[in-house]
Image (cartoon, rainbow, N blue to C red; front, side, top):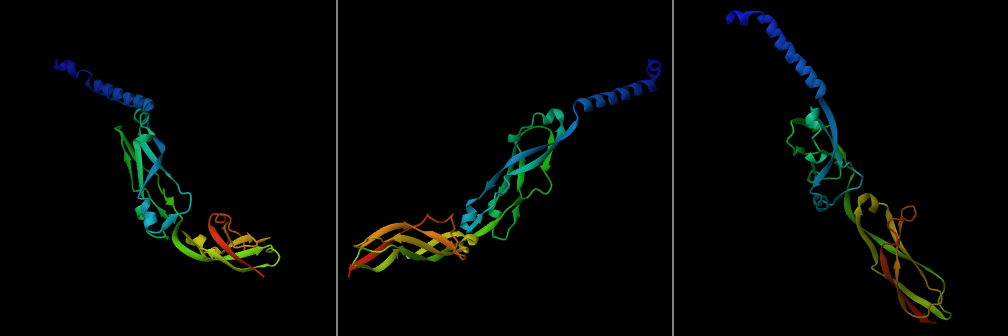
Length: 224
């Protein structure tokens, strides 16, 4: 028996090794190790903390992160996009000088034999501005003439100022608000609700703010 085992023993060992190597080659050809990218939607936490700190993000920031996943093809074929959860926290944004935040963590919810990591240098670039309050005078511009033998005694506006809470960049653009009112043929006291036009320091209308704020203009008229 021992002689039979020892007979061509080296050849038998070599055959086993060759068979194992051949099996590994075939296995790797049919089921290779691959790397795939998954673009995962980021879950942002504590967005209310921005308002509590009088901050606002004004740019269209990236809402996805690329996850690099590595594993055998048979395993990767069963990995789904919804298996991943990426989380970033707006509580980390504490002042207007911050230029970016990063994803705090990535979680894999599946059970496949894979490894994963965030793609290098993935940042969420932010333009953060402080929210401030501005008060601006309201200028009344009249056109037309009252009825003959009548004159305008006074013109008043309520509220007297245009007040808004906005980003510092927008507030600093504003110079004053204006309302235009036509008094042609008027012969009695009247109050009209008029929308304001908002002007910058160069005398140009700020269209995105105009016609969104109304005031009551009261005109007192007397007979001469």
